[in-house]
Length: 95
Image (cartoon, rainbow, N blue to C red; front, side, top):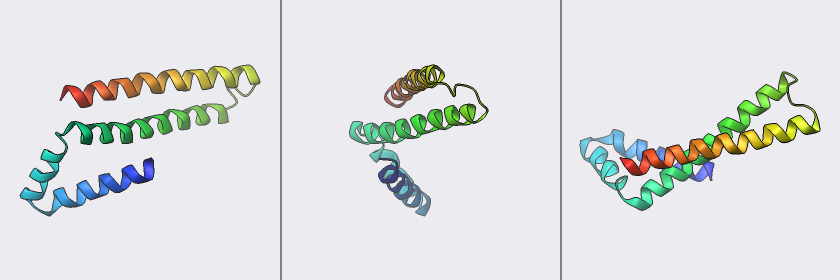
């Protein structure tokens, strides 16, 4: 998902930087609900990846290396990423 999303974001960046008309085209495409859904999916995968990466950095310091600690960290990762993803969805669809 992240690779396809990155290709979409690079396309949008390329078109929007070409000219004012290109920017207006990308801006109009991004107002469509399906485009917002795609962008939300891309941001969701990046947010989960970010939270999981922070979890691994914390575990590299020695915190949560036990089985019980790993389960707690995994649960916290899912809860935090879910809250961030819901927040991103509200932000995308409110604008």
